Amino acid sequence: MRQVTVTEHVLLHQTKSPSASGKFTALLYDLILAAKIIQREVNKAGLLDILGATGETNVQGEQVQKLDDFANRTLIHRLQRTGVLCAMASEENADLILVPEKFRRGDYILIFDPLDGSTNIDVNINVGTIFSILKRKSSSEEDVTMADVLQRGAEQVAAGYFLYGSSTMLVYTSGEGVHGFTLDPSVGEFLLSHPDIRIPERGKVYSVNEAYYHYWDTRTRKVVDYFKSPENERGAPYSLRYVGSLVADFHRNLLNGGIFMYPMDQRSPSRPQGKLRLMCEASPLAFLVEQAGGKAIDGSRRILDILPEHLHERVPLFIGSPRDVDTVTRIYSQTD
Ligand code: AHG
Ligand code: MN
Ligand code: MN
Ligand code: MN
Image (cartoon, rainbow, N blue to C red; front, side, top):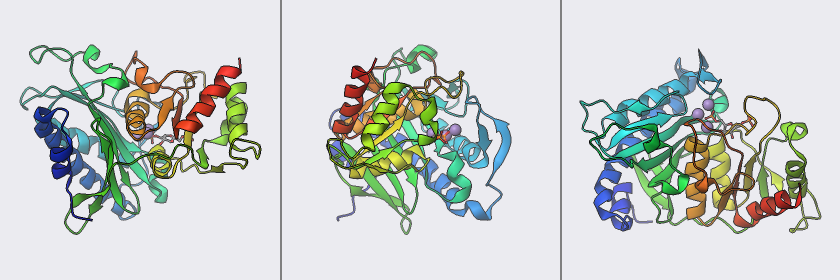
């Protein structure tokens, strides 16, 4: 395949808002630089003092891994200096991160999960970085407020993820299809490898942590029982594939078809809506999957229609092949 770089691809394909393409390219460039720095640490993690926990607990109530912290600091440092952002929000930071006056501020807002799949870092299983880009609503003269940030997923300007695995990939959308790039380490460039990704109508895989079966409500148990039943629409059980890194499970299902589910569960009263975060996980992946012909719901609502009430809001997530997500909608609506 002819070598197409990200810069060239954005220039050729970002036809909707050509004026933004320069800013968007600058933003992607700094995201890519941050990802290369993170990938370098991920690839050497076993050789450096970068495994294990920092001993801190984040706003999510999770043990912060050293690589969570490294990735977070790398992204904040790099993206503050891109001249395109006015604010950022990270899974690892309780509050909004405002871009300081001294850096030329722009009108875009970046929301990110710096390191997704943290429990897999020390055991050399794929991890990723997820990002979402919004445009501020208020005028540039005013200070950024939470009202600028708490926007429906449908308002996203762009979204994507980096997947640090056997190869390092960037998958992104700016509203004109989903495109995958693979890092060629010999030249340090992400080159187009998966143009116009389309998710299969229906898959053969379901991804869910079945350990929580006894904490799910009846309708959720019916959904999971359906996918593993020989009597389902396919006439054969779906295979269970669950990596424990959302980005890895999502990426496999995006390419091959299937459904990823993180339903609400009664394990902890403090998070009845399940574990995944709306703004830095569900929304960006929902934008991607819809651009690839798939669907993403919380059980009844389209993820991209949900108006966040706070930055770290959690949401149940059913995302993937449209026919499989429709099955969830059907069973959920039939079960009271
Ligand atoms: P993060 O590492 O960013 O906190 O996200 C972890 C998430 C997601 O990557 C994965 O699908 C899910 O946690 C796994 O949760 P369980 O261990 O409860 O199945
Ligand atoms: Mn986490
Ligand atoms: Mn995550
Ligand atoms: Mn994370």
